[in-house]
Length: 424
Ligand SMILES: *Cc1c(COP(=O)(O)O)cnc(C)c1O
Image 1 (cartoon, helix red, strand yellow):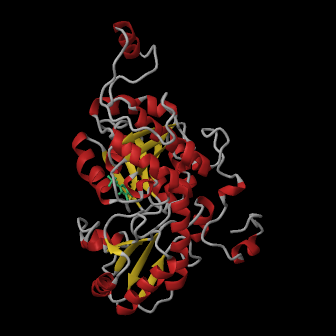
Image 2: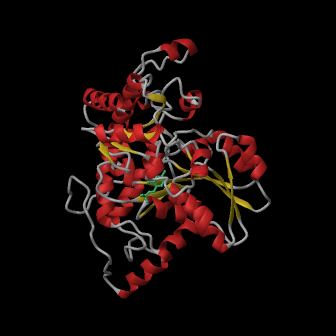
């Protein structure tokens, strides 16, 4: 990585980079929320709120309730006249530390944690929608997000129009007088298509809608949607934030007005609460998130470059490769191509299965963002609920395999994937 940030066009394109650009060592990620500290520092120390015991590591407050010195203090807490916790469905010190740390990393004013990524998506959408409202969403979405928009929200009189995410005119054309929310993920799963966040945010702003971005694939390390005009960011913390296959979790990040407004009461009274134990595990995950995401991105870049021209593939999709049709956009709005590759096999499903069967280091698994390299066949697993036509429409072929690159030695991974490609 170049320390001088070499910005002058041609030279920059030709520089032998390791798959990360605009390093935060240059100070580009300093955030107001983080009091001027850089990402790696915030990941380790953000939100740290030591108990009177002075423990080094964050304490785990595994408690549901709280006690008060007097009825008057209980009254004051409930009225909000005195700070403090009243019940862990409303708030918990360990959960709050996780929320504060993730908000600092994201550069968001506020964060609310949830029990899973899906509870974050559901809560972020439903807390601000009511009967008669309209949503515009990108058509390439995580399966369960699609289910919420097509099956659940219509039951409450909320309609969604789906558009090709990269077609900015289509976002504009889909807007109705009652459009309240835009929803998208970028890069998309599993075909790694990008959506121009600034352009879609501008359309949303013009019509008074809020842009909600599922930022799971990019992580807070590689993409900051709030800085590009989004109003709300959601995460499955199950993915990179844990990153070690242990717990489920989710998060919603936005400004104070949103988090303390419609979101606050919805969360308190419906209870998709993150457990204190899971918050503690995720908090420790955040400490190594910048390291892991950068290293996994470097490895994904190296593997993409080494395997790109393998004869078994019609294409290898990776936003960090110059061959990706939206590579220029990736360079603009991300700080690296991410930790996931998509391989499209010429030989279709049979070749994809032969590849998966031959893997020795990488596992067959539908999770992602893990320290272990995981590979899955979306058409028969994560996206099997879609009809064949729907899959074709969003580019999920029978030959597509998604590889989430982990932290194993990159030469071992190259040998493993290479041998499996040869077998395919
Ligand atoms: C995994 C995932 C979710 C759902 O998260 P869970 O923690 O499994 O509930 C949502 N969006 C994307 C893009 C995901 O990859």
